[in-house]
Length: 267
Image 1: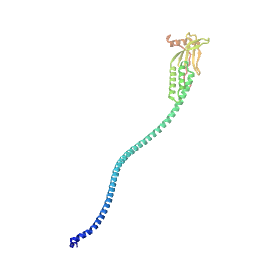
Image 2: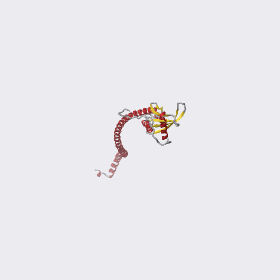
Image 3: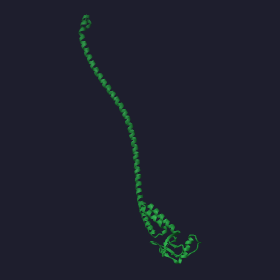
Image 4: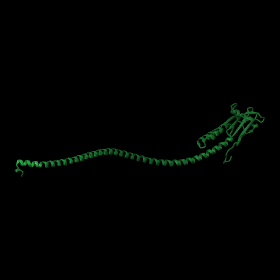
């Protein structure tokens, strides 16, 4: 239809359409600019979101690795603690068994201790009775032993036993030997003379003055040794002491004495 228009008409028609085109392109430009801004803003938000997602993902990966290592460590600790707990339970069972055994042993030891404590008390009483009738020759040693007993702890059975054993061992040595002692003795006339006392163990003793003027036979008694004058045996007793002191050759002498023996439980 426009092909038939002349150039002038064609120009007029174009000038008439120019305002309309300008308005159209202006509207199109406004629409395109608004959409672009929105698209750009959306794109920026999307990029920011992607960046945050990437950062969160990377942080999560790091935390996940740390948590994974922590979990492994905790699992290892749990295994170690479980093993330790099992060992403790086993140790508790062993200790319980040992405790029961020790408790039984303790009870047995207490029974044995009570038994030996009674025996030591009996030995102590026997020692004290013996000391009251012991010869003067043993007085110093027996007094020392008694002082040790008085200082010893009553609970210390071993210490008390050692003291008593040492004392009775010394008494046994004395009883198995012939021993001479020299003591001061007051005579009937008031004179003090040094006499020789020859002990035949714990059975008998014989005493004589150096001049051979008076002699005694000593016998053990409940309150000590008792002196009995034996004027008829002065020569024999004096010779016995001289033989023991090796001032004269050995000889056979008859002296007074009693021989005790047990037969069927009777003396």
